[in-house]
Length: 107
Image (cartoon, rainbow, N blue to C red; front, side, top):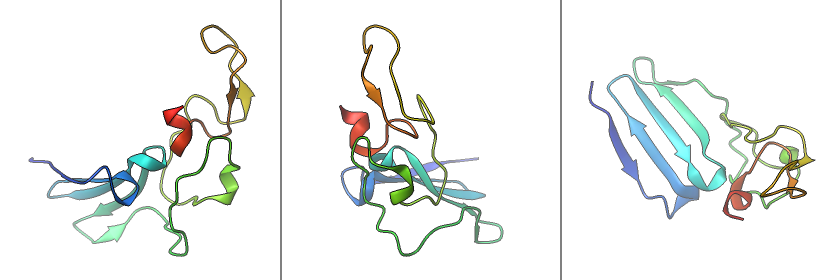
């Protein structure tokens, strides 16, 4: 099975598409690597809910997660709840809820 990769990481929230004959996956690298869409190409059905009202703007470091688009699938690394990093070399650095989203990943 061949998989193609296309997109322009510098535009559209860093949208990159991975596609095979069975599925198409849209990943938004500027929004924390959010998997925004997973299309089953045999049915044409998107397996993820998508809020069509959202603009998918990257959150700022420390923003409240609930104020941004909650559709798709996100990983919460390194933390789900807000906390401070416990050990060197980042001891005391504040970690926002739901990991390092958007601009936070670049700090």
